[in-house]
Length: 128
Image 1 (tube, helix red, strand yellow):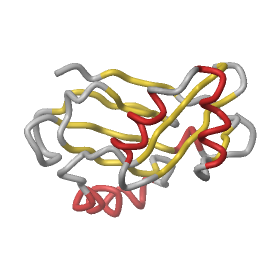
Image 2 (tube, one colour):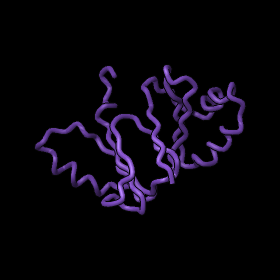
Image 3 (cartoon, one colour):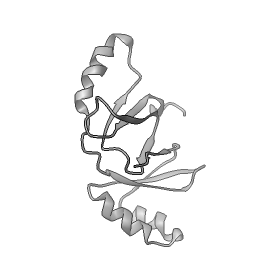
Image 4 (spheres, one colour):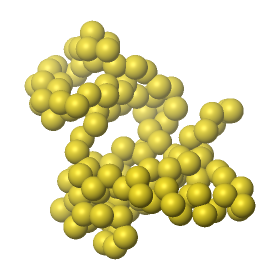
């Protein structure tokens, strides 16, 4: 993990909108939720001192009640890392990427401005 803060990233995802009931998954670290079985989410930094607990609780107002795709993640080799392309039209980009031959995907992502992260990205499927 080195000196990065991946271990401090935490997330919760919910079904039925809002972030106060219907939790369907949670995790710590770099997590990409897939599968469409959630409608809202909350992402936060979990490494805070106990004295800041109230601040963390009030951050729940940052609930994202419409969990729309915010990017495309492509992992060619899980031991090396992942390509991440953040975009507001992630659905369209994903369908373009899906139709490419395997050998062209990394170059397509690079040409569209994707960044490469060597950290391990965990993918969690939340089924409908």
